[in-house]
Length: 169
Length: 175
Picture 1 (cartoon, one colour):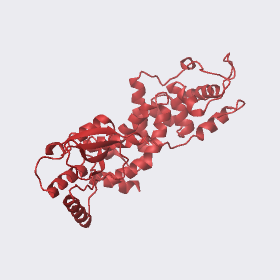
Picture 2 (tube, chains in turn brown, cyan):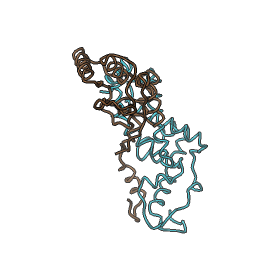
Picture 3 (cartoon, chains in turn brown, orange):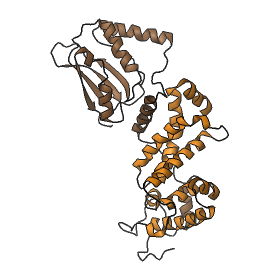
């Protein structure tokens, strides 16, 4: 604020005192990253060391044995904007380890429409049409999250994917 | 620090390195764009996206003789000029473009709001000269106007902002 008897120098001083940095909305970063990935200018997944890759596969196998699918996405540092609910148990017969790897590969892969932050399966259920797992994703809009959801391997296994936007905190 | 991250981005498409560059430079670029386009702040978000996309496309022309921040700011300013051009905004502003004061004219308003109420041409020279520290010659080059025009615009812009900040004279004789 500037007092009423201020002179031009006060105006200049007030301008020079303005903050030089303002944090942009967090979704802007997601939009920039998506656009750069879509152009093939960035790789979303960091390169895993051999040990880290071995540990990831071992964790996947362990979780698959338990009936779920372990995920090790690249973007766990991102704040999710949407949840993808995996509805319906997969009907296609696959070994659990193979399915876990397929879901995990999809989660780690660069996606033009957004990034997968994390995900997991719920406790095993048998009722048809139940929600069996989820992915948390970061996308610039619900349209982008829906585009991302359409590429989820859950569709190929006979399930469907429901997109829900997360209320900003 | 910028150099190693930039090389990692260019040669390895490293998202991790890009995120560091983004975090280091975007807040200043966003503050700049948001002030330049203060009457339509949502456009500043588009400017940020365009700055980084164009920066990737023009990395081959980047010279380490200038700082990365300066180079990115130049791209941001160019994008702001395009926004103004698309909106048919002239950067040679006049007092006639000043909107009427809304609300109680005796109540002083903050500087950011005052800037937002100025014509784009006034706001541009104020932000570039008084906030960002550009010289009149630099402003003239960047905006495609004469240095003398930049000086006269700055004089009028400061007067207009001052009047905006504490307009206690409804007859408009302040000045």
